Image: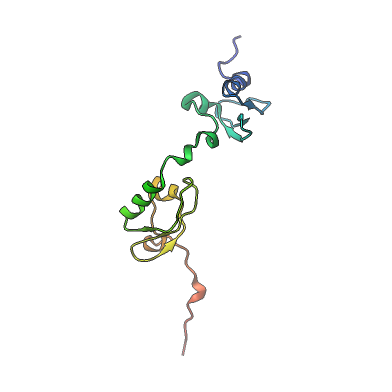
Length: 139
């Protein structure tokens, strides 16, 4: 009986090709995450399927999250009528200081604004409601 094409040995070799190592000791299938360490010491989990289909490696080293520039983020927010108060942009998970056209301020990530197509939680009615601020006087 032939060994399956993808197994723990394949994952270990893939890691070595990228100057890293596979820290997991058991292979449970191509959709189960394994623990890896890249040559710079970043530890991360990935499925063998990601390596097979996307040919990816360490996200931290590849700077995948820094696909957009500060100027791009600012122009995107301004195109929605908003203002960006943050002075730097690091990655899509960073909280930003933003104000909508109706002067509501909130702290979204660019991932929520751009990739999830969300906007001001107050204007959209999805923001937190604080009931403690309203007092009703009964006479």
